[in-house]
Image (cartoon, rainbow, N blue to C red; front, side, top):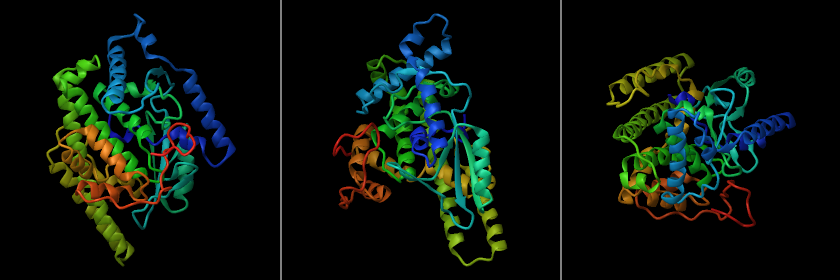
Amino acid sequence: MNRWRRACGVGLLAVAATGCGAPYLLRAAYEEARILLRREPITDVLARESVDAPLRDKLRFVLAARQFAGDWLGFAVGESYATYARVDTDAVAYVVTAAYRDRLEAYTWRYPILGRLPYRGFFDRGRADVYAAQLEARDLDTAVWPTTAFSTLGWFADPVLSSMLAEDTVELVTTVFHELTHAFLYVPSAAAFNESFANFVGHRAAIVFFCDEALQRAVGAGAPASRCRLAEERWHDERVYAAVIEEVADALTTLYAAPTPAATRTEMRRHILAAATATLAQRPLQTERYRDRDLARYNNAVLLQQLLYRRALEQFEAVRHGADGDLRRAIIAIAAAVKESPDPFADLGRLARGEPRVSAAPDAVRRPGRRPRARRRR
């Protein structure tokens, strides 16, 4: 399944539950309650003889992945992904993003605790489309994209949803690691950093999980070598695609900043996107995920949504290399570097280059995951 249906690791219900109006809040609470009431332990599901082999395999790997995340990555997984909940549709929610048409800047919404975020979630596609149309009437580019999963950032014990199980096992495990990363580290108002960090951890953790036989035995899992190769190939392609769209973003930022007539700017924008599509087609992609991707279809909202998960992936990789390839050490180093940081990407860059960290204001960042205790900070 391609990234148009990427799991939304932004704490979607946490966003919705702190929305701007009472009807919005009540709908969010209702939908969250429906999901929580449907939870049942995965061990109970696996005990049923009626469960078919594909579902059994995926649920076993979810349990193994959460154990791996707790034992090896050092995440406080709690009861997250220890339960299963069936939902009625393939998409659990719909996310609206918007951007200004004359510059590469996202339209944002402010939420308590979470800060400013470039998206708003809905549980109904029709409501999402109506809201997007209202934003378009204000001369904004928009995009509506479905999500199969979300993280409540540790406030609730997130279940694995039936919508997530449409993915293959490698993608499912990658998603679990991605969502658990949000509960481990979340920087308010830094959506691109949070999603890109979780993207890096999700893919890299999946590679370790599927490729290290000793670790798989330790968590009671076993997987064919094809899953190891697929995890590696997907991360390779993710980085290739990220490089191309970051180049597009740089080119468009320069274009929008120049005093260019509107007609000329439109033509130049079309040329930039067409050239990027050709560039991506020529890159050595190893899977089908980004093959034949037409970037000419991207408006500013779509481009920024794609960038949301893919900023500075090579800097995350540089930190991992600096930790002698040890993902756990890299995660700990990154979390320490961006703690209480007003600019996590700047601190990530310094860490990637081996430079000392610049001190940050002591109250710049708090972790919203789980109900906060007095003075508890990351």
